[in-house]
Image 1 (cartoon, rainbow over the protein chains, first blue to last red):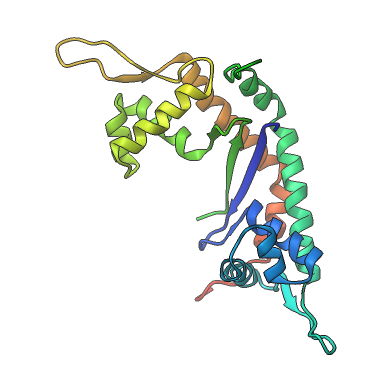
Image 2: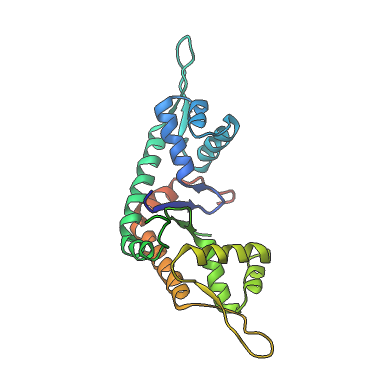
Length: 117
Length: 117
């Protein structure tokens, strides 16, 4: 496993945006349901739902919406703003990783030698 | 309170470096003691000590060392490597904040209007 950066944004007023919520949005996009996305993260439906609620209250536009559907119900989808959040967060991660690469290399070189190496 | 970035580095093998350990190092540097630094962060001595242990095991060189002293004991100090860790982390924070500034501004503008604004 390579060294990873974990980037969290702490907004005034307590809303946080970090890798967990972003991964949940990506999985909702892929699975079309909050419960399936939560399951894929080993998260209870309640916890996944609370994270979605927090995201939807955290910005002027919702990130996730119910999609009315046919006979089997419509499931859940990202809004255009939800996709924008994911895209921006992943771009921020990449930009930050790039900006700190030299320092990360310095730190990695000072990690202990692992057993068996 | 302005928006803040919270940067954590996740090394291979589970060591993490984030704002809590760095703040603890800065306070050990200022206070000359693990217990005073922990107190300043509302942290038990045990928790502060465990974080220092984790830092000292996480790299080839220790970040914190006991400083043998006179009649009253010598207290605790950062090693040159400990200071380098703090300096590098703060530089990484600044570089990352700079790299993501445009995205942060976009997100801040989409936050809900606070009561009374």
